[in-house]
Image: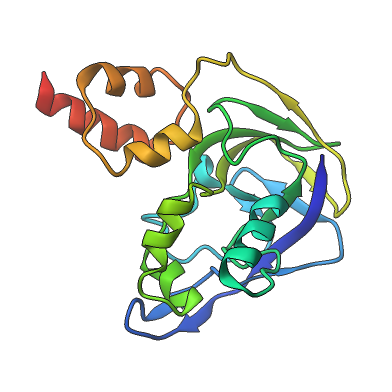
Length: 211
């Protein structure tokens, strides 16, 4: 398991039917080592702070294997950073991981918190108003992480996983749960996991309506 690409974005104007405005979704590979702090990669743009970024969504990971799948699905090469991922990785065993799983790099430690939920910005970036639905169906959402230990990372760097219990909440479960109604027991199970603050607020609101 290693880093295939480190991707950093600047504020870019994106205009179209699905989304118009500035966005940080256009990430480009950088050759030099990059510092990762509590809020993510140094010099990486986060524009819509209501829905993106923050301590619990500081770093977005995507698997090289999933980009390869998309390349076949879309009939074109999908370069690292296309979906706005900060780190493109290879070797992760599955498109999802158990929330709370840690990725240990030479200096940096990340902890899995949530899946990426597609939005209109992604659809416009892909030039396809229906792309969010395609993304949901594919079940390859990528993974958000919080930063447990800050430090520097570099392309090619190896990492290891510090696993959580196999019966924990997976990011794929959370991803699928975003598109259906949850019962109280499911919400309580999700809330017991170290999920991101945005999902926690949403689940707490849903649970309050059921009890």
